[in-house]
Length: 193
Image 1 (cartoon, one colour):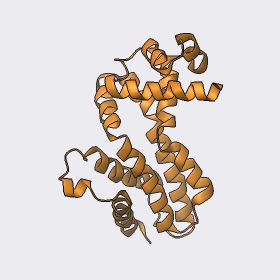
Image 2 (cartoon, rainbow, N blue to C red):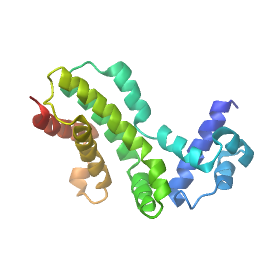
Image 3 (cartoon, rainbow, N blue to C red):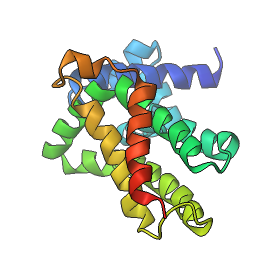
């Protein structure tokens, strides 16, 4: 088995156990056992439980997909680009909404966990903000605060996903592409020059 395969098995085990038990409810020993490695191997790859948790959050977030989309898939068309980005983010948030709810609940009681977990949304916001700055310079977007605008779009997507368990089934069953398109259209209507 390659080092990368071992690393991925550890990340997958950490995600599974942290989703079930929370960050503080799971030990590195339990993660290593589920991954089929010894604890020394886990620490050789990540150094600490904190580093493992941060790597798990990053690898299971929208960051890799956003980075790829920003590098390779965007065309400069304001609506089309936002639709690609919003669909990417919404798909992942939808798939992980239960884990996100658990993380938020646990982070309320554990400030150091909130500090570790904040890296991902801060990076997402920064990437989106940089894109919006570019669209402002191109005249495609009003000169709004790009950080605040990025937070507004991300907030719509996150709010939808966090509310999935509370929404009537008819709203929760809309295709994610349709949800993303409606949020993007609302956002664009408020940001166009």
